[in-house]
Length: 219
Image (cartoon, rainbow, N blue to C red):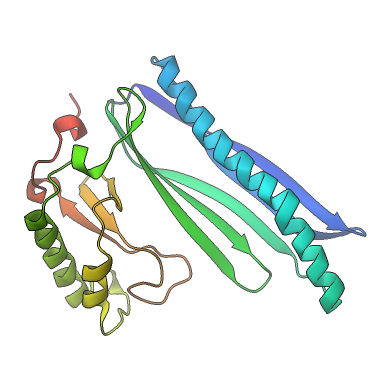
């Protein structure tokens, strides 16, 4: 059971030029409430600050850049910037939260993904070495399982012919997050197959994770 409640806050702003909207900004970020007010305050400040920095970037960089491009091309496409988040795991000890930041330039959408794993006991980042066993042997174990899933076409994606080789080369213990079913190791989009916004993730059951912290178990 979690001792923290999450709500969603939102920042919206539209930028126009001569009455025509050129950039729509819609940023959603989490707000935390719970018994441990210090932890909740730190988490809320962290995500509010991230949203604030992106909003500032939209105002000071994106919007002026769109106007310059419009002056050069004599045409303005409506652009959009967004931030969305969701929780993949939450109990009294651990929070895994995923944030996607996107920008649409009128033709193509580009998305960046950020994953934070938190130790809720002291609001510190939960690094892989503190969550499960990080060794050469466990790395090979997880990579072999990931390559097997790719070979079997998990998810129905059209994997590149050399996707297994790429997955092996780009595997990182730190690219992980908790889920109800196990630990998910993820990769950047377009790395294993062509996609606009899908970040491939391969879930390893907790029973198959060496030395996994018992923090993931709810009391």
